[in-house]
Amino acid sequence: MFMTRLFSGVLLLVIIIGAIFAGEEVVLLLSAVLSIIGLYELYRTYNIQRSILGIVGYFASIIYILLIWKDVPQAEILGICTAFLLFMTIYVFTFPKYNISEMVFALFGILYVPLMMMHLYQIRRLSSGIYVIFLVFISAWGNDTFAYCVGMLIGKHKMAPRLSPKKSVEGAIGGIVGAVIIGAIYGYFIGEQLVLFTFPVLKCAIICGVCSLIAIIGDLSASAIKRNQNIKDFGDLIPGHGGVLDRFDSILLTAPAVYFLVIYLGKLS
Image (cartoon, rainbow, N blue to C red; front, side, top):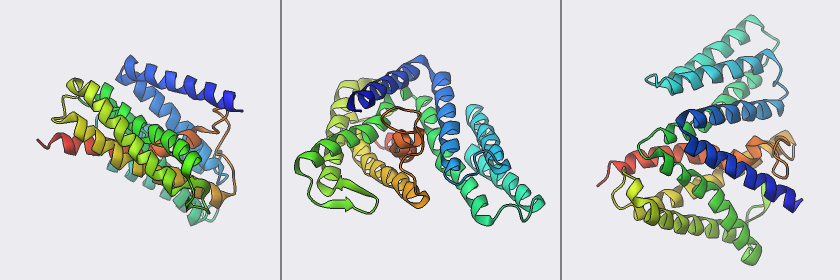
């Protein structure tokens, strides 16, 4: 099991790094594919993945992705409003086939997966985006690795026992500190490439510290959804890891956080 998890994890990392260096359009395609697969996995927990709600959800997500690709002003608001209008149309003209909770969950899926995931592409097309985007994975997966190691060594106090019994407060602190250290080292070596930043070491450390905390929320949020829906994993697409959402749960919240922090910190001297 460990070797399967390790191999698939390394392969996934290679694919992601390859996509990042291949260019913006490849990151767009990868983010779009992950968004639709992740949305399907989420919809499956509510058994709407093949219903008209699910189909419209995928369609609305593709519209949003195209709006982002074409850099349409206020693409997020336009995409959300379009999805809302489509779902309300279905709700009205098929009434009472679907209840309001299904409608809300279908819209939530678009907010939770494509809207968040596509920030990877938005980061990649920033100035120095090819280097900035790695802060997302340092914050999320770097934090996860350090949290696991520290938790295994000295973890005693449960952080969220009802959601994730194996996670400890000590592990969470270790993960955040580890992400800050890696972020600072990354800023030191890549600082000249990060043209958005003055003081790249400090700003990379701040971004990774803040976003590693957000990554923990992202991970626990996914755990909460799985507990509510009484499932262990969202899928089995990635051997040893589960589905796309199981592997990218922390990325979903971390990517937009990195995007906005980079923009705002980049404006500070």
